[in-house]
Length: 132
Image (cartoon, rainbow, N blue to C red; front, side):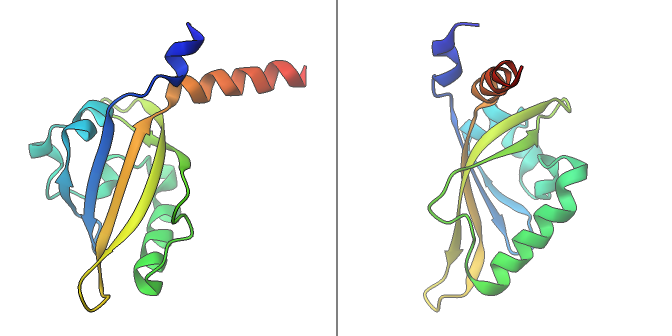
């Protein structure tokens, strides 16, 4: 693997989900990153890209953010495991923002992300080699 490949930015996935976690916007970058076309994603749950073993924790955090009107990851990038259409695991650098109306009521969440799998795996390999 060329080290430059691990840091080269790929398409940016932009996704908006409403209060119930239903996908209402699925940008072209999301199609590239996750493999689902917009027509397949729109109207479906975010579970489409969340591995089953992480769903409970995801929905607890999602509901907590909607209730409080704040996310603990505001202005931070979170590297998280996700899932492609074919079931393959990928790692994604995500940023989150709550979308609010003019009365400050939360309408849903906007996430932007990039596939960082190559970088994540290269860093993990370096850590493992350093530990030996």
